[in-house]
Image (cartoon, rainbow, N blue to C red; front, side, top):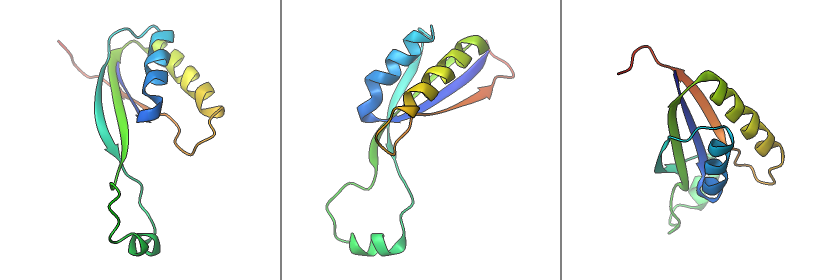
Length: 101
């Protein structure tokens, strides 16, 4: 059993849920988050009084699941990211679980 964590911009939320389903990961949790990118100081200075929100609306998904399902999910995410026309790929990490109840 491992923990898989996936982050994506809000526009891809339905796509990520579909990828989890295709990988046979039926149980997962999600949370709304703000994604941030470090910007150059010149860009920050020109945007000093902007009323625009500082972060990008994003989502984080996570699931405790088996290795083979995570491998299937990674294959699906990699294929999804190769067809993107934006600079916001879906990102995923795997964390081993030492103990669980």
